[in-house]
Amino acid sequence: MEGYKREFIQFLESAGVLKFGDFTAKSGRKIPYFINAGDIKTGEQIQKLGEFYAKAYNEKLGNKKAVLYGPAYKGIPIAVSVAVALAGTGLDVPFFFNRKEEKDHGEGGVFVGYTPKNGEDIVIVEDVITAGTAIRESMSILSGLDSKVAAVFVMVDRKEKGQTEKSAMAEVGEEYGFPVYSVVDVYDIIEYLEEDEANRENVERIKKYLEVNGAKD
Image (cartoon, rainbow, N blue to C red; front, top):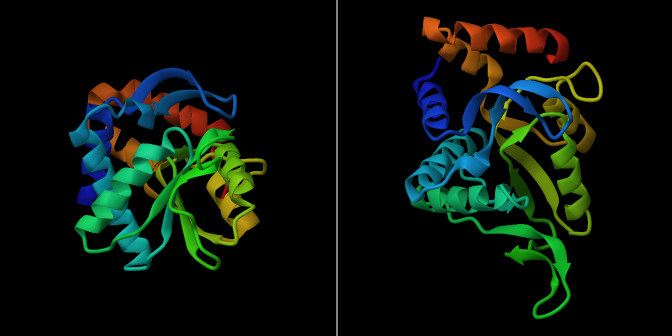
């Protein structure tokens, strides 16, 4: 496993973002582990998270200047931190996010921050994709803009099937015609956990879950 992936998983665990137990995902599935960007609580943590996303962005998109979109609510601090981290590498990109409810006074509208111009590429930054529900909601929100989504970045690819036997990430990519990237995937997490015998139970539970819900692609 690449060094930065191990560092990222260690960071997720130490920050309380990666948890093990019994949880219910947005898709309704009962899952043995949970990734929650909402548990990022300090300036140092959000700074580090943005830096990991920026590494993935630079690796996949290079110096491509796109507009970052952070879906409310968890995507908002992610978008801001990634924009700051990218600026630190010399790539100054704009960002925006949505309100849960459209504002009918002041400047109005559903978006806050930069307004994408006709033809500009948008990059969505999210925490995870389980069944693709949140990304589809974002695509509906963004549908009124004269810009196109060029890519999506998430923390973890859960490698779960979506509406078919393919992974939710693959389905989303095929449906909308853009790549979906992750910093790490669930098999990286398994590999990391297997390095410590104390994690045996969590590893077995995740593997059993993937036997039922894992993608076949």
